[in-house]
View 1 (cartoon, helix red, strand yellow):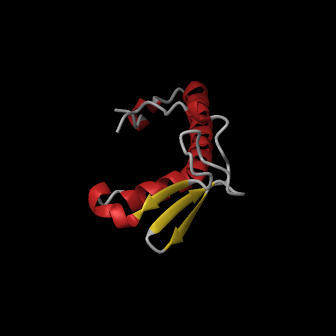
View 2 (view 1 turned 120 degrees about the vertical axis):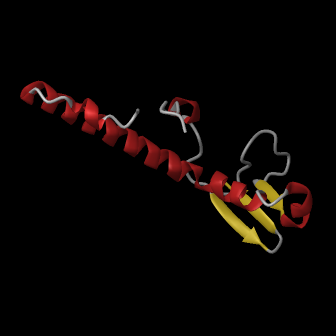
Length: 110
């Protein structure tokens, strides 16, 4: 795992409400109200994962569909954690400056 942050600006403008519907052998990623998820998708109901084709697609199709549907919430959580990390680093910096404490022993990036 890298110590670099993910550049979240690349996701700006993404759909905020995505859901995953499971219908028998299909997983259907939908942007309500049934908008297509992307311009590459000629079918106008979202992305469809046909689990009948799971042998050809492998076992990753279900977790991949769930990850795609959860991505808006994951981005929000990552932004929140980045902000919290920044606040904590600022507090550590203040403590280091005011009390002449060497905080390098607490550096998790090493």
